[in-house]
Image 1 (tube, rainbow, N blue to C red):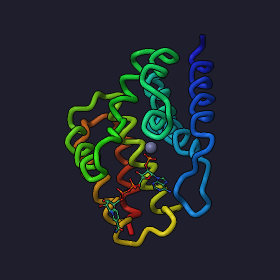
Image 2: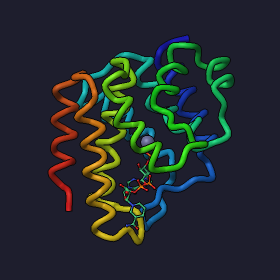
Image 3: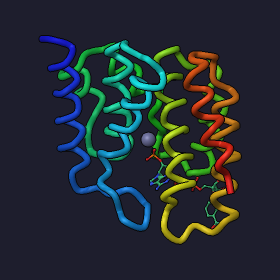
Length: 175
Ligand code: NDP
Ligand code: ZN
């Protein structure tokens, strides 16, 4: 199968899995916009052509936020992609504060592929937090989110100067 077909299959799969979910912004945007935004940022600004990274970006929230299992991703998309998605997936059995802290602790140990996805995820979320924030979040909560995202990103291995600049630009939009 061509790279293009493989990537389109991932997009179709993620779109189906996220079909009933919305982002937290006032317009309740379709959830799938977010994984597509990550992959687009990686490919355009980041110049990333590594298929595994682009696939993992598209699939990055399927295990965390839908009923999708590791085994399913493994069967459909293979070990390399599944490993990256697993690296960026929080353990939802843990309390939220613990999950947030673990992201900071795990960042320095991430593979290059997972670090790229994580960097793009935080960049897109800060961009959203500045331009289409979760409805009803007070200023202080948005500020805390920017500070936490920066702590995670500061711990990541250096993987892309271009994407780091994009993150920095998004961070500069903090309220
Ligand atoms: P959440 O994890 O609940 O929400 C943020 C996540 O929602 C993002 O990481 C993103 O994750 C997803 N998301 C969906 N829509 C949007 C959008 N439009 N813009 C940005 N992100 C979106 O946040 P927290 O609970 O961590 O809250 C942030 C901070 O606020 C924390 O540091 C916490 O300490 C503090 N807090 C404050 C409270 C208060 O009332 N003052 C209450 C609770 C927490 P993804 O990419 O995975 O979809
Ligand atoms: Zn995400």
